[in-house]
Image (tube, rainbow, N blue to C red; front, side, top):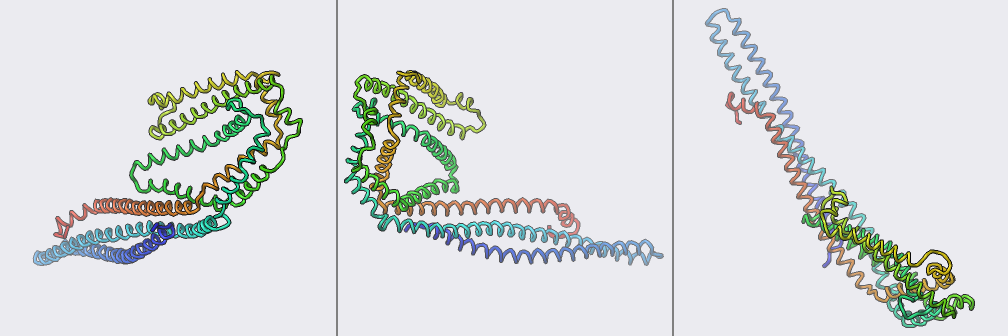
Length: 467
């Protein structure tokens, strides 16, 4: 059964709460141990100081002895005081080491608890967020799979069957007709609209390609956390498709109505507008069609230039990821294929300039002027009819092809994949944190041992204490 993100975060939060509670218990015990060790260290320091003072007292008494017989007893007393002092010093060194170990363990547990608390807080917030989002997704699922939205694919198919042909004929018959695609007014108008849309589309494609290249580079590290980004994007995309369909009723219903009106509505052209747009003058018609062929060549050259620019930008982004410190010129010098794409832009730009020049300037009688006047002969009402037709067909075609159950399945599959990736990534993150904290503790222990090394060596060598 696919795992939901709510289930994942619930389990994660429960596991983190249990781990955090265990660590807090250890931390509390270690705090007590460190505090007791500190008290014992202070006591050992006091004993060492008292023993040192006893040695000094014995030394003064020995130096003040009046008779040799008295001195022998005082010498024995001083020797005993020195032995006691050295033992006290050794005890103090041992207690200092024990205190350092206790404090190091307390600090390591505190760091572990802080890390676990941060992970617990993050999981708690993620669960709250995912709970809200799950409610929203559930609402979209219900809307997408039940009437009226669930019936939209069938309604769209019926609307297309009933009205697509009639609406298309009604609108397209108001435009000049020509079987030659290079000389088709309507075909060129639609192609130019698509060409303008492609500017934004190319930018979006370039951004997507850059993300894909970056993701591929990151995933090559085999780190689990670098596998999450792709799963997150795939899940977000699946949810977005579900959302758009669940909320598509207004625009789909409007498209159905628009198509029906276009199929039965009258022409928006007046007799004068039709005569100007669809001329009976064979010479003017020929000039228009020749000019349209030049515009087709010019538009195709622009499209090729845009494609060359997008191809170079895509390749450049990939090359820059591999060699971030090089300039664009250095990247091209090191990559013949990249240089070829760069050179292609100049070639395509020259071709576009040549094709644009062939259309002439805005002077009367030039192909450019002929086309401007011809396109201006189309009233806004007819352009709006064409936009409604094409938009309605696109909306209804997408709705007809939609299978609501597939949208739901896509979300569930992507959600499960994301939950699995998150689980692996968070385990990896905890492993990394444990290694880093373990290394930090070992380095701290090494530093502490080095600090006490001299005292412990002296205590072991001179005082017969444990090393």
